[in-house]
Length: 303
Image (cartoon, rainbow, N blue to C red; front, side, top):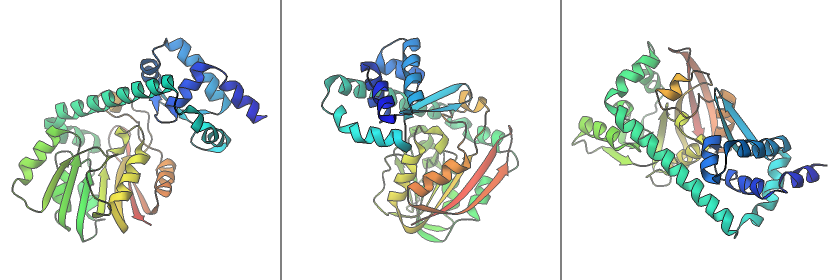
């Protein structure tokens, strides 16, 4: 019986604490060790029990494994039913606070990485994309509109393209150095608004944009679906979302040298996330690029 299996899996204080953290965050083993302040072998043993029970999902990418509470199926139904029991427990609150600190440190490290490589960004991008002119491919898919936003705009390559089809352009990035480079390019342009912020907490009003693009940025996030949900919030009904993203791959160089958290995103997973966040996928196009990578462009419409 599933109820017995689930209850046995949670009949341990450490595993209950792990589930509480993983209900909110997706973490790798090293990050979980930081949060729980325990040895890796002990943590790995408890994670295996939770994973075997169906209460925790593991996402394996190359040499890395990421853990999160099950997102669907009977395991998720069980966790939803007991979620209230985790509230008000001081030790669980301390775990959550430590997890939040680990996430903030990770985000700060990512921001520092992009600050450091900002001057080399164009060269690094060209090394990966090779012959494909990604800007032109996106340009051919852009609608004429009042306001367009580039989420994760970097030094502003796509902003220049958006300016050709939009009355107002908004660029958002969490790297001050990247935005400095963008500001140098568009200094004095009254129709260009550059804003610092995270993709999961955008500095835009509800339904402020008619079109949004997210070009090769979602693979840097622990939970890309949260960024898609935010993109839906700031996009008007019927508005267009254009995503350029790597298909799933196993090239660890993208993690070690380019700062990627995910080794691409499977097309089926991206389409599932878009459906979950009230987008209708209109078209999907693939392009082979360097380093045995595939870039996929998704055209979606907010329902």
